[in-house]
Amino acid sequence: MRAWRIPYSTNCERVALAAGRAGTAIDWVDVDLVDRTSVHELSGQGRVPVAEIDGEIVVGSLAIVARIDDSLWPAEPAGRAQADVFLEWLDRVWMHPLGVVFARILGSKVDDERLERAAARIDRHQDWFESLLDERDHLLRDELTVADVAAYPFLKYATDSTPGDDYPIHEEMRRLLSVDGRPRLAAWIDRMARLPRA
Image 1: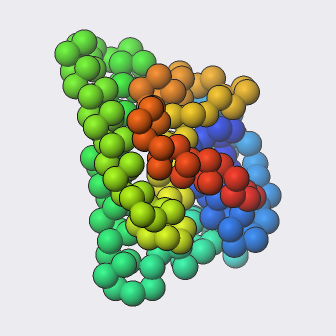
Image 2 (image 1 turned 180 degrees about the horizontal axis):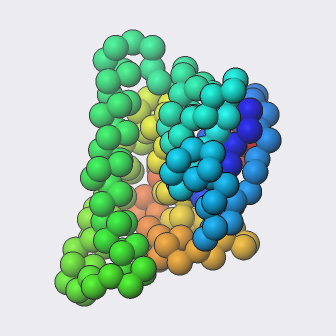
């Protein structure tokens, strides 16, 4: 398969993790952060990742992850539903305060009080991730699931200092995320960091 990415993209890392687990090779095509012409021409929209799989263009990190390795979703209906609920929460609730922070970085008017509330929510959610890891190795169960693949590329910024990754939103995530007093989260981030990637 071939996939279009922006280097250091969190959503693209989801795909790299899933492909690494499945042993799927990816021919990566790097896209300029500003000029997304090739992605627009390919998919009709400008977000990455975009993948070409068996001649079909697939848009969106989790759609691509599902095509690579559907077994990341638990097989039983209750487990699969639990994973889907987590993914929707991650996208609609957990990402919201990050969106507030990002809006400020991009120059939108975001007052200090709203920014402080967003930072407090991000910090509180870190405690929830710590609790999810109580007596298990991964977020939903002992084995790796799509929840881990979806969340890790964002949560890693609590400890990450990847050379060259100086995107402003990632720098802000490094400031806002913390594993202080969260040993299970720190250990999970370390375990995830050691997984293979395509």
